[in-house]
Length: 334
Length: 191
Image (cartoon, rainbow over all chains, first blue to last red; front, side, top):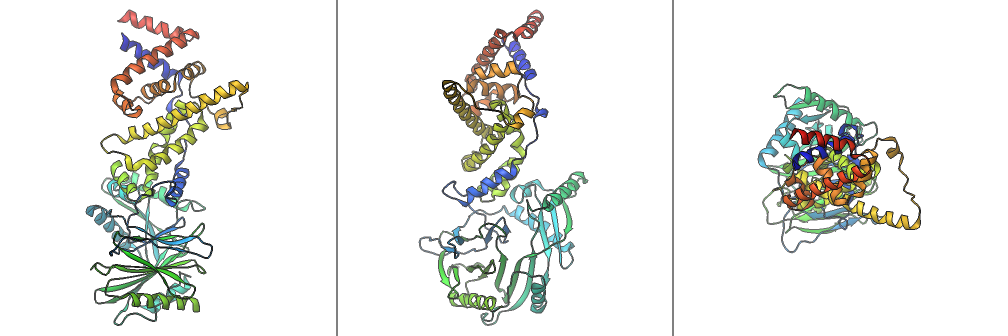
């Protein structure tokens, strides 16, 4: 009896309430994510989640992550560099110990390779992968971009870097002995979420619609995207299997530019000077045999470009600083 | 699937959180509307709830349902608003004025509840209103509601039963109980 009475009470309540479909649609994603990003920037307001170490450099919404897989010893100290207005433009932060599950990382890499293989020189593409598991770890429900602007000779790289008005990154005068040009690469700036004209959203919607309409078994959906400017310039020099990588990245288009360098618990980082006006952060691990155990990063305020140099432990601190100084000199002479 | 997203967020991929917001924004907003009875306030509350959830995501235990965990944050947040509002009304009644004018969205949109029901629900305690909304509209089970409000399922069942009886008494008192009584009579006859 009581149960029956409850059922009536429920029916009465439901009939007096607005049905779910009558509530208006809302979209608070951008508003919430804006607040989340602001929280992440201010550790006093919220505990910052540990940053995932990535091999890619992103410059979206004024924040970028520079690769620095370096380990060292002694108590960890973090370094901050400020610009002329007192804003922190580079800082080292605790490196995340998180790694993508191996199979997920491998799948994501395979998808990227397939898109890359389908591209012609000078092209960029957006792609969406219909793989819920991989999406959960990566750009969930979002799209990714891949491009092919790769150069086998320094001359080709240099002329395209200049003609495309890419971040200025010349070959350093003082490379350690035996290192030779391996390749140069330019990465276009992809459309970003919230850009005027909603290009990102339109591409994403098209790709996701295609994925929804596709037959079972189709996983990868891509379309070429016309790029407008270059985000990164990259140069790689090699001596056998040892490599030195140089990267120049456009800083924030609006807001405060800021780059973070991952620093593991035992890393050693220090502020260094590359010229009278140019400070940099140097991070090193002499004990590790891993690649990129040696890194140097700085921000050129005049051109709004972040520079970074990565090498293994066979390169000395002095050699790293000489590379940095020669790039600062070349950029200043332009 | 949701756990993978949470792992990614905990490890620094804060952008992954947007998928959670996108997935749950509407149910949480509707839940807030039903608890608060005010559309604009509900949208603001939903934003605050997602920011709170992001800040607390490190404390989420994968043993429970993520949805219940999110609703528990929404429940506590709305309860606080309702308590503050009650205090506000008390102050307003002391000052003999009410400057709480509804925003344009409130005026344009339909009411969350019919006027008699809204009035009766308003006279219930915040906890009772929450329990009824979760049970009747959100159609949560007793164990789910228990997890959301932090009480045991048996106690929740009893409180919901009492809240329904209280609500029925209020509606009958206001003359809205006629249809209710008729239905009940039919049911009694049948049983």
